[in-house]
Image (tube, rainbow, N blue to C red; front, side, top):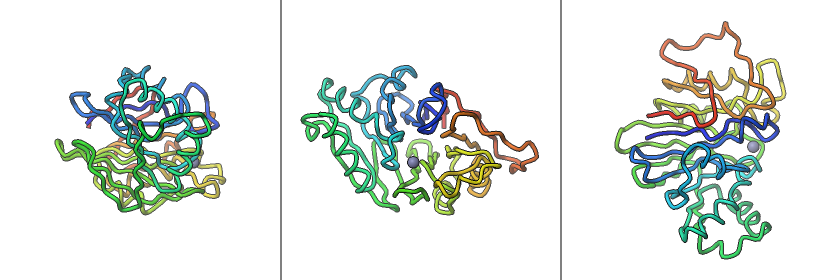
Length: 250
Ligand SMILES: [Zn+2]
């Protein structure tokens, strides 16, 4: 599989970062799976070279905060033009808010172009060559982390969504080559846990415990969090610095 980082900022973030979203595609680029859909996500897809809406088979929403779902109406409008249907997966409460946004923003005939598929922590859904597993994360609203397994390669990627440090996310990510985990705060900022977010050290701790090969910190604020140079990584873990349209072959 290939993972394309469409953005790596949080909601109140440096606008050049874009909102955190990951496009997953197969090796032929024939089907897309989108992990979160913040404001401007379709523009970000196109800027990164993945503009074909008819290839977008599913959108997974980790939770209902705006930086994770405000791009949905535009995706559905383009699905309408392309006469295609997008499956939208998320917790029941997340999908209820997604539907409210579609209705509020005047998306008519959403039922023709959107299929809402509720999931729960522990759910496993097969989407083409990908098998997607959901795990409960620890945020200020109901939220899930997502593990994407590739049946062809046998490899996997885990995306945390928004969360403070969570053993559930460690378990979900265990053994995956890649962990994309939020790191909203510097270690010196003590607001992280109370706001349901992680520090950069929390992010690395999850990757260390889960035995990942690569960790990609995302969901930055106005600045890139600073990693303490004395922080001890396990010997086989590498940190990848995020950039817009970064591609990872997994
Ligand atoms: Zn959030």
